[in-house]
Length: 225
Ligand SMILES: [Ca+2]
Ligand SMILES: [Ca+2]
Ligand SMILES: [Ca+2]
Image 1 (tube, rainbow, N blue to C red):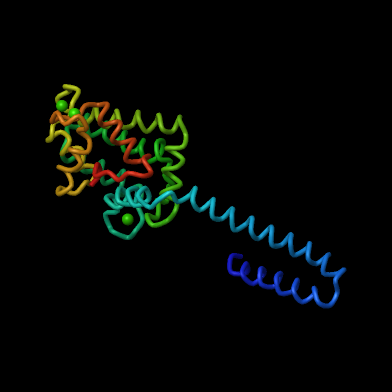
Image 2: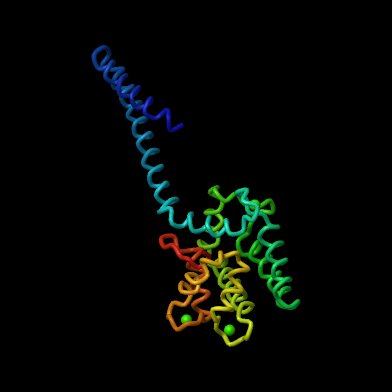
């Protein structure tokens, strides 16, 4: 549709000019018809501009979301599947954690896939707009955002293996390796979460950092590498 607009605008203007010479009365009628077209076309263009601004405040957010998704795209085909996110993470949890904690991790990851992010069964194409729409549905709805906070608290509880209500560097490292954060990104991830710089990550810091990662549209974060 957009490619016809310059043509329609030119046609409207050209015809108005042509009829001005030949038929004044008809010109008035056609003039108002073309005024309508011009008004409508201008409104469409304006709507497009406003809509575009609403949908794309910047590319920081999509880039951040895509980076997170790519950590899980283990075969590198551009699609994150349920098996890559849930299946493989559960497999790794079973290999490196005790049976009970591994079962808890399995539940938390499965919950994230379905209940928190509402991911489609057939996976998600990382480069598509669906990834932004998915995050928008979570962050734009208070109930869904609460689910995200509850999920982050559960992840924190599982990561806090000595149950002292804070994550040490090694506890943080173990959990974030399981979330496929590359080893080179772990130090920056810890610093991003430890906002009061006291050398450990408290629950509130952790939850805030997770929500900020998924919902802050204007600031990037190294939390997930
Ligand atoms: Ca894949
Ligand atoms: Ca701890
Ligand atoms: Ca701290």
